[in-house]
Image 1 (cartoon, helix red, strand yellow):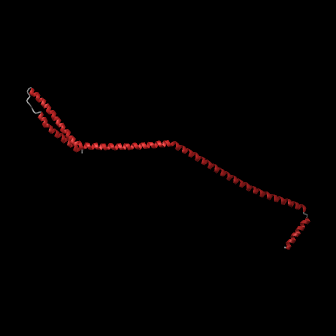
Image 2 (image 1 turned 90 degrees about the vertical axis):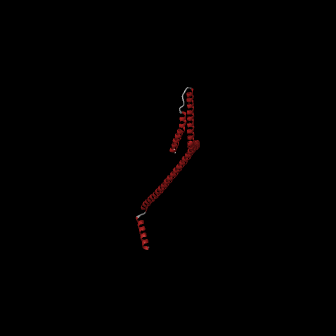
Image 3 (image 1 turned 120 degrees about the horizontal axis):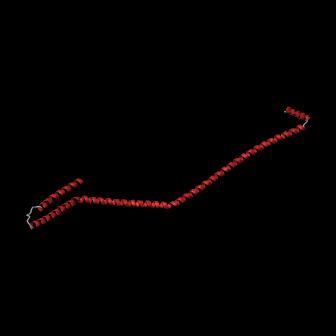
Length: 202
């Protein structure tokens, strides 16, 4: 595309130079130079030169406009489309940023309430945990007391049995002593004879 454009510009410049050359040649054509006629010739030559330059410029400008009209229009259209797309993207970014800022503001406003709710929830959980610990401690205390009561009851029963056995032994000893003191040798002989007779009768 650029090569074609440069080629067109080169052709345009050459054509404008070729067109302008005869005009300048006519403008520079020798005229008789004598007095007033020479001055008029110089003035006419300057006017023809200006006209030739204007014609060359008009041809160059027209050619440039003809050749560059389509690329310039396409560039301006593409640039306009890009600008409109950038504006749309900027508007979307602005809306997104505004929504994000609103969300942050909402969260910041709701933060004290959330902190208060968390504080209340923490206090409630602490109270529940304290109650659970107290209940567990009370249950453990009752278990230890019940175990102590069972051990005490067992020791009391053992002591009672030992006391009964000791009392029985003591009673047997006292009775033996009394029997020894009250029974004579004749009574002992009679008891032996009775026991022997009972064995024979069996």
